[in-house]
Length: 212
Ligand SMILES: Cc1cc2nc3c(=O)[nH]c(=O)nc-3n(C[C@H](O)[C@H](O)[C@H](O)COP(=O)(O)O)c2cc1C
Image (cartoon, protein in one colour):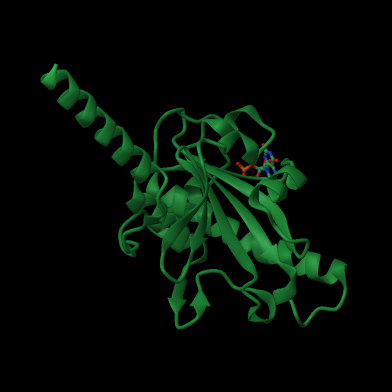
């Protein structure tokens, strides 16, 4: 009886620690800024992929490298992607198997917003749920202070997002990963899930993973 109780206790403690691990924020390792294919070869390999190996996660190191390539700081307060009037209006949300996270770009950590697998919410195509990771690009229109109208803000946000997305394409081509940027998404459903205020807009999403 004593042994059974001890076993139950051990299993319970293990389960609790697993839940705690899964539901915690993730501190990413520093990005590796060397290695990969030369840029000309990466451009040669760049493409969109619509078939992904399900059940294969990216490592935290790969996620860190990917996010830095996308939109990390490469100089004091300046990034790998340009932005009109240096507005830097984007926040990257990361959908992985363990949950939805907001990337804290200064601390290079993933802040948990919602635990559980919501990858399917990141797009309307079947392969989206199989991609190891989906990024949702959100623009804060309040940071586009030099532009007066909604249409100007929207134009600039969409252009700026293109650079970030292309950085992801080039990183993936360089690192042997598959990717695709996607406009066919349910923006309202995503904004609701992320609890975005009206001035923060979902622009596009991008899947990353392993090509079948
Ligand atoms: C802004 C934008 C939105 C896109 N949206 C989707 C999408 O929702 N679904 C999809 O399957 N492909 C999408 N694509 C990928 C394009 O279809 C793809 O880039 C195009 O077919 C050329 O293929 P390539 O990227 O392999 O050169 C999108 C591309 C861009 C630039």
